[in-house]
Image (cartoon, rainbow, N blue to C red; front, side, top):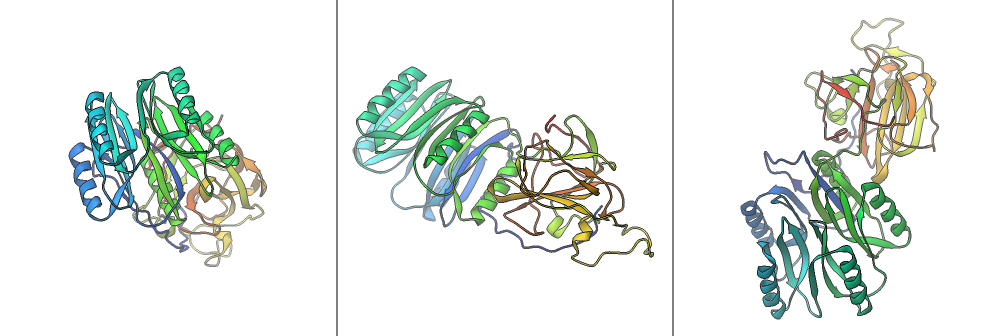
Length: 432
């Protein structure tokens, strides 16, 4: 319903594609981003032939596999600049893998990536030297004992895999602190990662099975951001934003089920109409607002935070409305172009990774939070209304990446990968 156009800058995009028709909506993407530079290509939803052709093409362009994941036969990979020999094999039984690894070991190659899917092993070998040990299908107790023994011998985990509830790993020479945890829920994984990050540790391997996470942390520094089981659209948006910030994917993993980090910004269980979705023909959601949403919240409806974050800015004392669909009169006068009055009363919240969510057309004095407040997803932040440039009561909601002022909206989904279109009714699963 917002008709105002305010131009912003378009973020540079990371290099990624999703194969046409790929079934990615119900497959979650877990990933880790760390500082890096140069080219990056990410592809998922590939079958064996597609993966083989893509890897060959990238190899000839001077790229090598940075991360590999296979889930129910679907392959995901990240390619980054590299040189030298690389061999990739997948669909191997353990005896075939063992034979192949011994042959490559004698040629001066070592395992850099290791995946198990449905009992079949995939691995990437690159030039290396020194000791290498591989153990497959260990119970938790067996794994703990083996890792402790190798740790005391100066070896560290170079790759980790989980399949059928069993742990498998590759150990290579290394030094310094190492922590390994498995059987973690999403919340436990996030809490553990935050604790280790504060201690100067970073994720070096991550695996997920049946909603449980396993990871290895070793000494590191600098920025690190993670996504856990994200929907395709949200993963692409996060990767594009992080790429523009000088971060690159260091790990990717596929898993059953996908979810969005964003929830509908109203009470759990309540249903409202999507008055305007993304890129609406003839509507106002184009350009900088291309990925905004208008939700038909009646005046006085409680607006809730769509994601955990910190309130960064508010305006709450405006009382006027301009209806662009009605004749201009002394009582219905347009606001100046670029004026913040076009938004009406508003809230901006900053989230992990630098993303901001924007909430417009709030009730006069209806903002319930202050700049600097920490808020949880589902926490009340305002009351909806009709202030600003609007033709009726509603909530204008959009997300931006690494922005402080008004800028380019970015694609997101809600709940379980929903991207609502104009006219659809949607129900919140956010908060209480």
